[in-house]
Structures are given as structure tokens and as C-alpha cells.
Image (tube, rainbow, N blue to C red; front, side, top):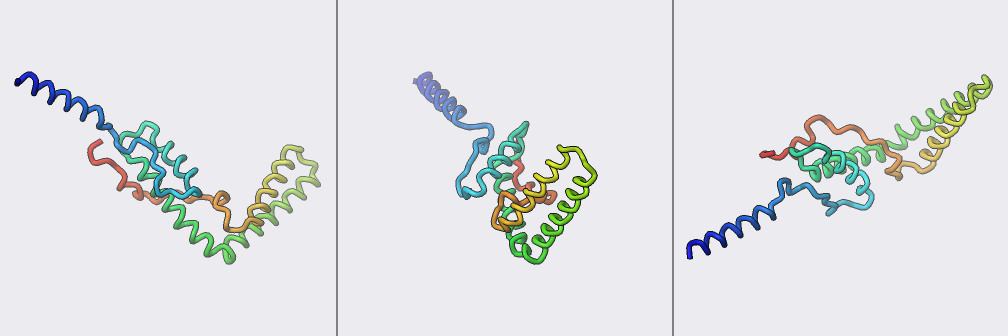
Length: 153
């Protein structure tokens, strides 16, 4: 009778042990992540998982998404007054540089690179502030992901 109970308890303990994952947050969790943000979420999550046993990577990815959303809202709000004029000035500089390099008979590869860059800037200006893929994400402030550290790694 005692041996039977011990066998049952040991089997139960083994099942519980197997079902427990060392890191319960080790799987990608895209719940509550909009389609727009899924690429950044996956990229952040995968970068976080590399040689990492002490941080919840889903938490880090969600904080990155929230950070981008906050910064992007500010970008859209200030687009006409700050960012659009900067883009227009950058396009003007690139055109002048391209013109000078053409007159100086610069290397064809340099001219092609300048033309590609100019086209990219013009497309970005034409698409306006509503293209988040053109938006450059700012680095997270130090300590922003401290809440994602596991207490017992």
C-alpha cells in the first residue's frame, strides 16, 4: 500500500516537473499585438532570447512596442512643423550633392548610391507620417525594461 502511494506520488511529481518550464515566458506571445507591430515585436523578442535566461522577452518586446507608439504619436503630431521641413532640407542637400558629384565626374557607384538615397527620401516625404515602416525608432531609455527581469533566474 505504501509502495503504491509512493509510486503514485513520484509519478505525479514527475509529471508536474516535466510540465513546468524553466522559463514560462520562453515562447513568443503575440496576443494583444497589432498586425502593424508584429514584425518589431518578433525582432525584439528574438534578439532578447539570445543567451538570455534572466529577462522576460515578451515583456521587453511589449515595452519596445509601447515606446515606439509613444514616440510615433509625437512624430505624427510634430510632422508638419518639424519633421517635414527637415526632410525637405535633406532632399535639397542631396540634390545639390548629386549635382556637384555629377559635374566632378565621380564614380558611377557613388552617383547611383546618391540617387537611391535621394529616391528613398523623396518616397518617404511623399508617404508622409503615416508609414510607420519609414519611422526610425529611438533607443529605449535606460532602465525601461528593468520590470522584465525575473526575480529568480
